[in-house]
Image (cartoon, rainbow, N blue to C red; front, side, top):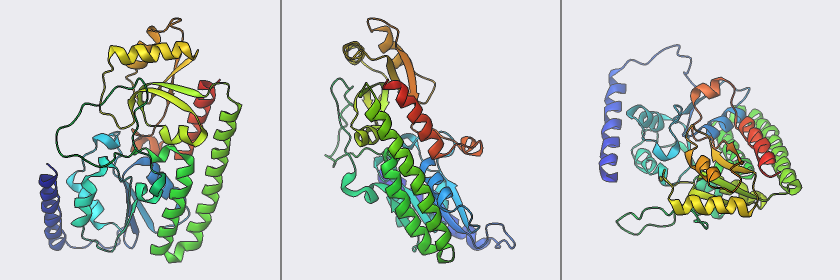
Length: 325
């Protein structure tokens, strides 16, 4: 399958070359002379937008702009062409981004700057983990693979500070005339991230509860590790499972009772059946369901309506304060 996908990418890019050669270049285009930055997910898009505020020479594209999350995304031919031609491409770098290697190998712009967030994170990247009571993944047949890293690196405000510093440095390299503006933006945005990080730490330090219980996938490991929180969950963060067994539901319901938790957590989306079933299997059946936003389904429409990385993480902080009360 991977070989077939690589062939398809090669065909798409070859066709794009012929199309470009047969088309007359536009004159007076509003994007003429601009630096093109292509990002996969919303948080990266928003970081670049913040870092390039008050500049007029950067065009930013978010590939995952229609609500499809990273784990289910398949690039279109148009997406591949955007990546091939851009000046900077920024992506997460986990298993969900397996398509990127072939896209970059066949890219037309051989001088583009590429940022892989997991590589930036280095030895701070965390492998997927199975905690007690979590639904086991179905084993896949095939060759033994290396470690699977938790891809949800953007859900740590500490990580965001590291990523933004790296992105700002690279942006300044390809846009030296805007270097001072970009670095000034990075300093101001970094201060906002640091302030939010401190607010999370204060909230956890003041909390009477130190454990979260998720009736859902759990993409918040980087966040909980940052502040020393424990967790239980139905599935790991990158799990493709959607149905929880009786044993998993029973364990989580009993753990809710044991820890006297008033809240069962879930992530954004309309299907909260597992969390609801856990509540119905507790002794009191009175727990409230709270939602933490993992930004995996953020759309272009959300962005147009004012959603930002900081606004979502601030909302998550308020939810966390309630969950830990």
